[in-house]
Length: 153
Length: 281
Image 1 (tube, chains in turn red, brown):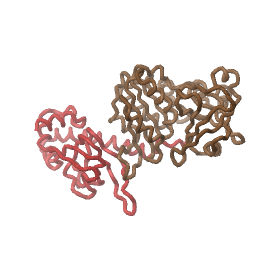
Image 2 (cartoon, each protein chain N blue to C red; image 1 turned 90 degrees about the horizontal axis):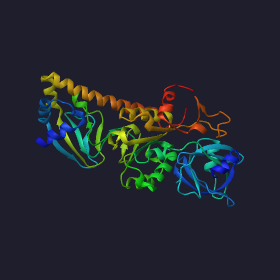
Image 3 (cartoon, rainbow over the protein chains, first blue to last red; image 1 turned 45 degrees about the vertical axis):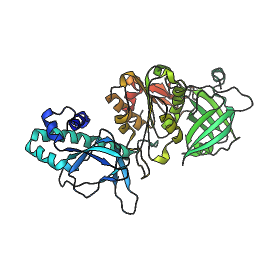
Image 4 (cartoon, chains in turn green, brown; image 1 turned 180 degrees about the vertical axis):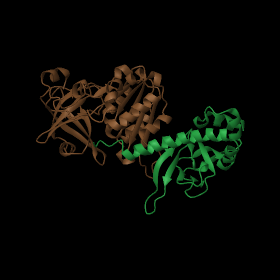
């Protein structure tokens, strides 16, 4: 548990978080592994967990009928994957596909949601951090949309 | 063409013959030219460009993408997008091409000496930066860490894939590649090139950054580098404009107070940043 606390405290997502809050978060955490090629989560299934990637890479994949799956972004070491656990209806919108062997810390979203409801200060800290991730991913998606490598004017 | 020859005859093309044509991507080709009839060997600085005359078609400004240590040849990587570039990439070995130059300021490899070098390229923007990478790898002890961040639309749009893999194996060298859209077999990053910063081993205080790609990309990259602690004077960009004379006479490539051909194409972000914030100049 001590090791988990250290890893979580060193993750940029949790940087600056009060020690008492870290204790609460560690109580919802566990180590997990995913083989390359396996799914970390699948679209439409309950999003009761999110992950801090320690090693490897997870592709965020869109399922498209009659087409091959579309990878829209990848999430790697030190990053958080998943925010559907925080917002109703708590269901994954995309597939998370381990493109390499992945070592991660799984954080029980259900458990953390309950703690956030009990302690709104903790909830606000978590929400601020999740919003920052959402903002970054939105920026990235917008840049992809404008095709920044195109030389056309 | 040596610098003395340029000073005397900057407008006079010297015929070179096509030695080799390599297809890099579905629309991008690398051509190797060599001087004809015992003409002088070509020395150039990384980042300089030549004016290439496709006889009967027209003249094109193209950055040199080869190894500055190999003076018996000139190498150019060109995307086929119009009549002149189509004609250029369709040349067969042995065909003659007129070459003027090299022209312009190069990348500041001297300024970067003793520092980390961070190279950020998008799409075909890796071509003008490849000579810098060759230079650093052949003078490895003179430079600290080399970080190459490269983004392209898709895996099939990546240039120099074998070389990227070989550069990544060099000591104190980190090469990160990302694409906007990866297929299922793609095991690397997916996302725009700025997403690579979080994985890059950056030491902004002791680094020089060199960027090349479309201006929209360079603007976002420069902005992110600033956010990571790079000063504007540590960031260099290569600008592209419609160059004609290449020696600052005709004014076709004027960009604010600068002639891209003569004062550039490489500028600091300190010089060019305010202009990148304007819609049109």
